[in-house]
Amino acid sequence: MMQFIKRISRLLDPRPTNSNNNSAPTDISHALASLLYEAARVDTDVTNKDLEIAAESLRHLISISKAEADQLLIDASQPHNRPTAYHPLTKIINEQFSYGQKCALIKAMWSVAHSDNYVDPNEDHIIRKISDLLYVAHRDFIHEKINARESESLKSITPTDPTE
Image (tube, rainbow, N blue to C red):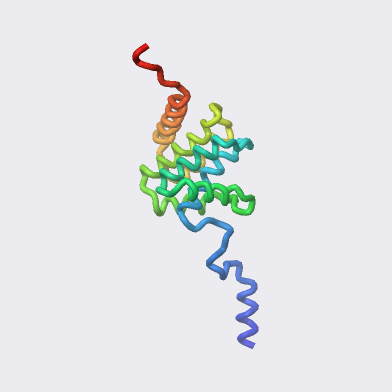
């Protein structure tokens, strides 16, 4: 009788018994890739430039190869891997990243948002939300937004020949 009760209670227990639950990323690389892909996806127009900037940012944030960054973003783009909540992702980042690294992530998200030279209100919203969940001060949030915009505009300026 006791075995039967234990089996029933295990079946009714809402907590997952398998530690390999794929519903939420469990490491920093997947969490970062998910957030960078969300910044690209949220304006409903994911471009190659969005993904290139996201991959480059991911490479710099966690020192991985281009192939690894591309694979992480491919994984993050799959509908079954998209986050339903940002709290689990930001919890991982809060536990493992310094304040400066969190600011670098916010700048990376702004760079993805600025990739098409227009920041969609949905992009602004998600970056603001992630910034709040990462406990990034508003002044740093704005500072990273300006830095990303300026660095993106500097890329579009072609250098002139100083001998002319």
